[in-house]
Image (cartoon, rainbow, N blue to C red):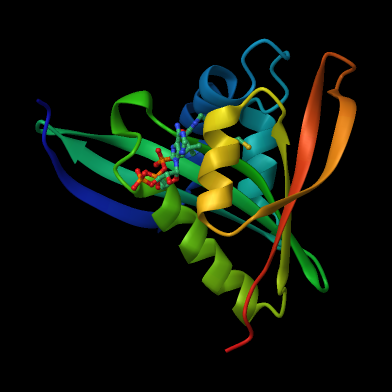
Length: 160
Ligand SMILES: CC(C)(COP(=O)(O)OP(=O)(O)OC[C@H]1O[C@@H](n2cnc3c(N)ncnc32)[C@H](O)[C@@H]1OP(=O)(O)O)[C@@H](O)C(=O)NCCC(=O)NCCS
């Protein structure tokens, strides 16, 4: 079995945009059309109100971006807009580490409500978010270009 020896969380750099766009296409947007291409990811990395976080991993001697997440910070609310973990690295706790890191940043930014939309058919992600304390608060038919429904999920972060 492949051995995960390193997993470091870092802010994404502009040169990561192409890789993150491919991860979005393959792991998040499959079957919906590719919206998060390199220029859109680059804009997210550059945006002042957004944090794009990557997990740089070393697996069996090979170093690569194993996961990433993006959170947009508003005045009182944050939106978790992108999250993906490489298939070979799932159920190792990396997705949870990324989201908890972003929750800490949200608290510092004064955003105690975090919101996201998840594909209704994505039982894995819905289970993942529930495990972190998110609740499904709305069902949004046709949310993804009329092709697929979404669930809106939210969490209220503790102030202490
Ligand atoms: C959803 C996703 C980000 C989870 O990342 P991960 O690193 O595998 O998650 P973790 O290992 O931190 O899981 C933490 C907990 O979440 C829950 N969970 C994770 N994957 C799950 C699954 N497939 N089914 C049910 N619960 C799951 C479990 O409670 C898990 O704890 P456990 O492994 O001790 O049982 C990952 O599956 C993924 O990248 N999926 C494809 C992209 C995607 O769907 N992104 C979300 C878009 S909104």
